[in-house]
Length: 62
Image (cartoon, rainbow, N blue to C red; front, side, top):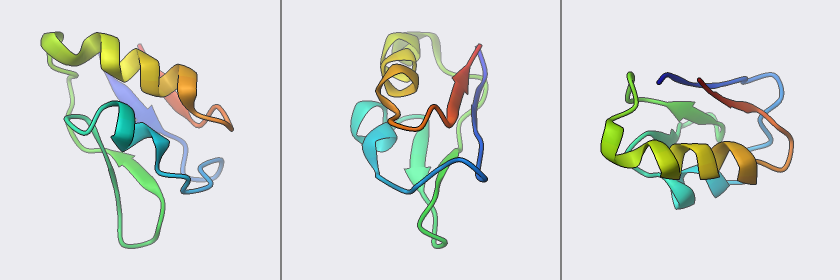
């Protein structure tokens, strides 16, 4: 599984690292990034929760 954040869509709400800090973090520009790929198997469910919890659908986890 790979995680990706669309920087053009991200609004920097900070929800994704709350759901899955092992994969997502906020960068200096105020936007999120997926810094761990592939997604570790033990946090796949949390990464999917981050995808589902993104208010602007900026996250893709496949």
